[in-house]
Length: 139
Image (cartoon, rainbow, N blue to C red):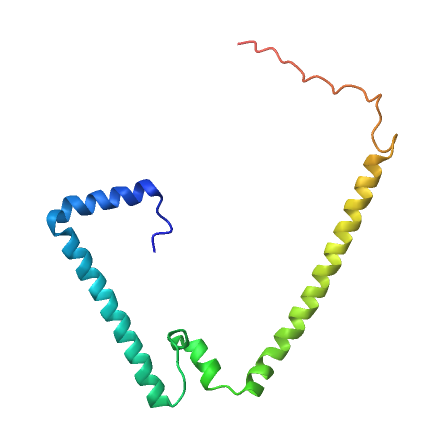
């Protein structure tokens, strides 16, 4: 919940809470924790009621409509039929990616071999780069 806050921001929030709530801060924290426990208990009871009504085991993650349809309405054969075209595309893409990686590794090996050979692509008697032209400003 607080993973985006660094330590200084967290300390500043604690000081701000202390200034706003003062002596009531421990009571506010305990009330907030009690509310969270009640919400969790309500969610657990709701999923238990749904499980009893539908006759299947439902977890909180299953309440996502996509996951619910996939788990409870589609048979394994239907799901396999839906995944079959995508699986073929995935396999083709994976094969192409492996080919590209292999070609890249071969090219890297060739470049390293050329750089290691003396007198390869670079020469030691290269002429210096021409100096930049100078322009006089007449104004």
